[in-house]
Amino acid sequence: MTITVHKKGLFIYLLALVSSIVFSSFYGGPVSYAFLYAMLLLIPTSIIYIFINNHFLQIYQEVEVHKLTKGEDHKYRALVENAGLFPVHNMKLGILKDRCTLYEIEDGRSITLGVLGKDELTSAINCKYAGAYDIGIETVAFTDPFKIFTVRLDIPYSFRVIVSPRVTDIADKVLDLENQVNNSGFKSSNLMEDSPGNDLREYIKGDPLKAINWKVSAKQSKLIVRVPEPMEKRTVTILLQASDIPESEQDIEYLKRRDQFLEFAVSAAYHFGKRAVPIRLIYPSGTVTESIVNSYESFLEFYNMAADGIYYGQADAFTEIANLSKEIRNNERGSDTYIIIREDYENPEDFCTICG
Image (tube, rainbow, N blue to C red):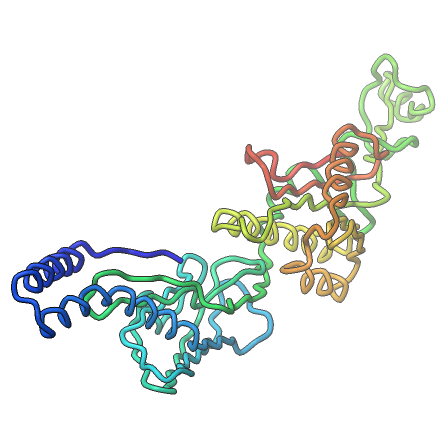
């Protein structure tokens, strides 16, 4: 709850209050004291009236679909109802405009409701970020009849939606920089197979004798060796290192980071999935959870879960993910390829790390 005092209205009220005190002091009588008592009770009566209005106010909000998609327009509906016996005058609605756009309902819209009155509001809505968060109407503001003060109150029931991230090519440019993917698996950029491949180069001191191609060496009158091919990885694992922020502290900056985190995560899964490269995903979903994406159907399962299913339900889950990330960075996980995607980072280069 926040209270805003209007200086002009307060000045006029104080002037009228002083005048009523002077008037009753000099003249007395029922008329002067009735005016004085009216001025003294004006603010308390207005406060009581406002809280009665708020107590009987009911707001219902809904969207046409269960899950929204970031950047797409959907139909939004709000029903504002006065269930009390006192009318509501010039109540203003506070919209969460930093995370969604309501095209036909502006922030600060004024509504007047009679006794048991209703007002239905409809609009197209566009959510700006992926994730699970409150949208629509956040607060209502009441002003006393003489415009002395305004009381802004949170509505009793907020409206929370699940917004799915977009699947883009945002991960392609990052993941293609150091890795070549083909239909047989994921090739390492620094580990080689034990057996030589088909590529040839001149012998260098230290090369194993079994790598020498004697036939080609005889033709060129110098030692030629076969170069080992890049090692094919057994698995590609994406670790989603989500941040652990209490719901009460999830501000707009958190929503922006969660949006980037989710969009990159699903785009990375799709990056490998569309190339028929099976990947393993490790992420917190209450507990530390693993899933395999090896088809379009399994990708959809992960995609449908991502918007609201990545969270820490247990205290030790955050520690387990952090320890796993540390092990991977210290090369304690063998020759597999790991991609760490961090939601909470300081330097942009720490957002996505490829290990292996």
